[in-house]
Amino acid sequence: MQIDDRTEWLEADGLGGFASGTTCGVRTRRYHALLLAATTPPTGRMALVNGFDAWVDTLDGTFAVSTERYAPGVLHPDGASRIVRFDTDPWPSWHFADSGGTRVRHEIIVQRGSGAALLVWTLLTSRGPVRLRVRLLLSGRDYHSLHHENGVFRFEPDMNGAVVAFRPYDGVPATVCLSNGDYRHAPDWYRQFLYTAERERGLDDVEDLASPGEFAWTLSEPEDEAVLILKAGSRGPYEHRTIGDALALASDVRTSERRRRESLATPLDRAADAYLVQRGGGRTIVAGYPWFTDWGPIRSSRCEVSVWRPVVRARRAISWSSGPARSQKGCSPTGFPIAASRPSSTPSTPRSGT
Picture 1: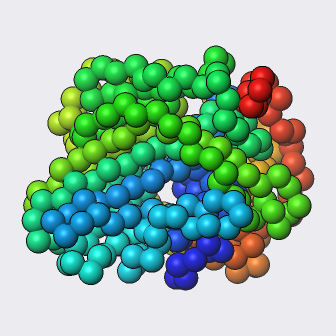
Picture 2: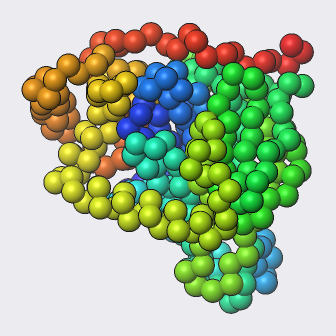
């Protein structure tokens, strides 16, 4: 698969939310995010964690494992240049390598039904211990909007054990982070991210994001893992979790998701499964990612089958690409009507000077 900013991947959470991005890691759409949650499943989508910057400190120096695009078109840092492998099966994963022999694998796994996004960096080879540093980039906005620097954003975290929670605005779900690393508070604004796909559509295309601080891990041996689990809303099951619990939970998510995905007979079944989501006590079908919501509730199992089969046939007929990676155009094919309007109940993000 191509590694560039035109080939895209998407991980659906079964609730209407998703994580998505490009195979090179450069975000090109307002919809690209690690934690984009449906606050009233499957609607009311909000972008909470848009992305991250990450670096690996080695005996030979520091190298980046991420890349962003800033206006007017500057790529920084240069992590994308170190990608030597990208896979979509069973979930998106990248291999980064530097000239000194250090190799790191990065995985993104969205757990179906919980809305949790699991980020794992695994040390594969090195000449000695390394330190991974990650800064999350946050907003807390409606997923159709863009975010700008302002004086209202709350940087201060709520910390309890291995849990770090951010509550950026009133009326916006908390972003709950569970990790097996350390957190250092160092708030800052990252300004002028440029989204080229939005520019091509003739839309506003520049955004500012908040970065409250830095997560860090020391990886000493091959197969050592840095785990960061992201979830929207109250702490819930992550209350009072320890570093050991983070590793155990990551292992459970990996095992259950691998088993679930292997149960789907073909890559086409796996791709189509992303469109079936929860609505209240029942289920519905999303009309298309990333901007459409759902058709409306499915009234019976017979109805679900009658609707589901055409979805699969439609994607077979148009030879939609298998797995979570998507077409160069970036939006999953759909010829279906939008059954729900854009969310109107979620608060708008404050702008500069307001």
